[in-house]
Image (cartoon, rainbow, N blue to C red; front, side, top):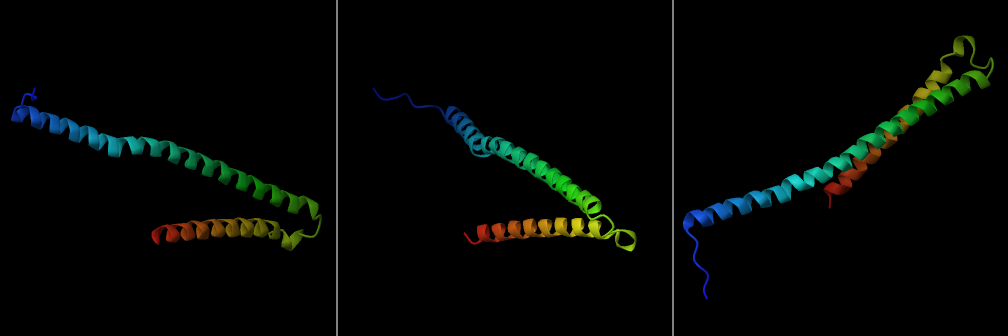
Length: 108
């Protein structure tokens, strides 16, 4: 038996429902999955940043206490300079790595 033909309003209503469900499937659902990915990325970067700051602070305190009078007087700025330079180098390496990864992704 042939199927009963649907009226035009019923077909349009079904088309509207299918379009809405397809749009949700292709846009909203991937964005929900992306939220978890971004959350772990932000959390990891905050923990990594805090860890690097604590390591730099530890290195600074080690330079101040273990070098006795080497960095005393007019050279008291040297441990701060060393810790700052190490952090700047690490930040530069991280930035260059991100730029390198983004340019490689652009060429694909």
